[in-house]
Image (cartoon, rainbow, N blue to C red; front, side, top):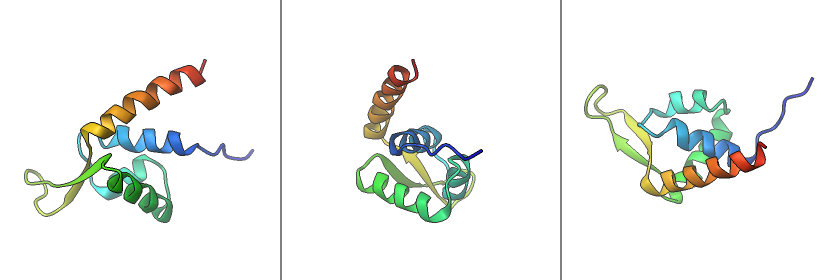
Length: 89
C-alpha cells in the first residue's frame, strides 16, 4: 500500500502547529516527518514569509536557535485549521 502524500497546506499547518511554543530545528523536522532537504525548503519559505521566526533559547540551551510561529503564522494557522475542518467533512 502506498503512502498518501500530504498537500503543501497540510505540511505548512503541521510545521506552524509544532513550532507554536518554539522548537529546535531537528525536533521540528522529525515531528513533521519530513526529510532534510524538503524540510529546509519549507522552513526557508516560512522564514522568508515571516510566518516562523528564529529565536535564541536563553533558558535551557543557550546558543541553540529555536523556531517559533509568529503572530502572522498563527493567523495563517487559524485559517488552515478552519479550511481543514471544511475539507474533512
